[in-house]
Image (cartoon, rainbow, N blue to C red; front, top):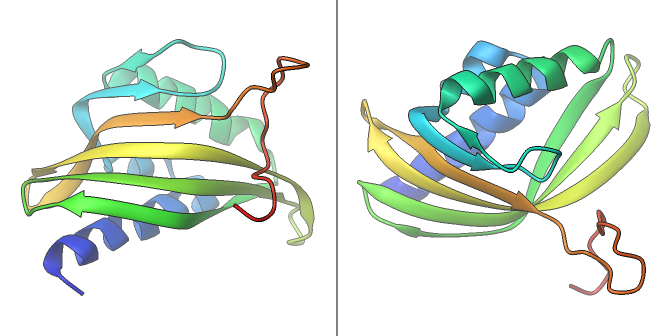
Length: 146
């Protein structure tokens, strides 16, 4: 595994761990202060970590005793030691306090990463889900066979 691949794997692992732990500080350390986030939920974009952190605090706070297990699938990346692009299908699985699966959904995710302080930081995040032609609803589970 190349150093770039290891650096990307570290960002992915830290993202998964921070979400599961509902650790806002660890989650926000993944992001560049000037990040632009195109999230799939309710707000057109978040410009900078201050606004993004408020959204993350609201998300983690809304979970109560539940946890979210994040899994990255079909991850693709390219780049070098200074910058990289990552795309993946990401599953967010809501778990009860006892660890039982309550619900899950998938998003398409793209990250633009840039080296800052000897580590990759997310400078752009874009999450999306396709919209059904007939009902205009988000499709939050990838069809089988894809």
